[in-house]
Amino acid sequence: MNEEIKRKLAPALQGEIELYSGICRFPIKGELWEELTVNALEKIGIDTDWDPGSHSPGADIMLSTLNEGISSKSGKITRTKRTGKQELSISSYRTTRIKTLKEKINFFDGEGKNFESYMVLSREEDEKEKRRIYRALLIDAKKVNAGSVEWIEQKTGWQGEDRKSGIKMKIQKSMSDQFWIYLDLNRFKGCDILFETSIPYDKLGKTHHITEKNDNA
Image (cartoon, rainbow, N blue to C red; front, side, top):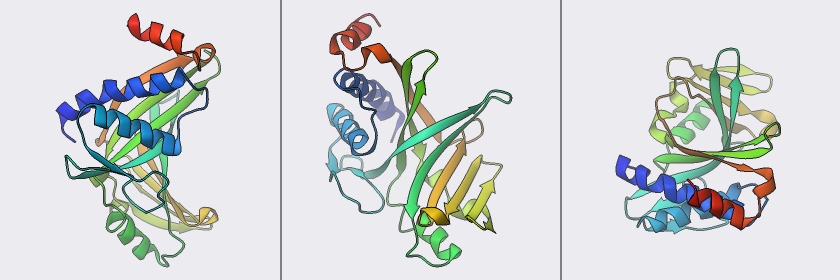
């Protein structure tokens, strides 16, 4: 996805999130995040191929115009006040059907990566300020490789890290051998934060307040 498309997509996607938040209080995640992404892409002229409810591995949304795929994810950003570190965590494949660690890594970096980008929406519930904060991040999937990580086996599964690039990964046995990805946003070079928007709790589900906010921006 080139810089011009990112520039156009950011306000379109932010608008979709704020419009939804003006109608509903329920947080955005899962297939709803996929649908809002599709709406924003089509508004800026990008044709999409999307099968809602599909559990096929890999790309959730195909961008026909660009011949690219997107994997939509909900993520969590954890901050460490003392160091200023910001770490994004997202879940990925469950791999119990794949037996060895080497085969799991090969699947993650090969057959399982039929997309170019992760489109991640992080949500923070700021109870102190009584607001919900959304951040949309676009991650270059080519820079998230299980094969570049040094893996060690543990009782709970496997864990690996590539300190230079700011990537950590885990495979959790208790979660059907699920991959988890942890990106140090202070060091990882393959992430663009498209935008951040915050909505006060008392304005969720109240369209006229969200509209008023946008008109005064």
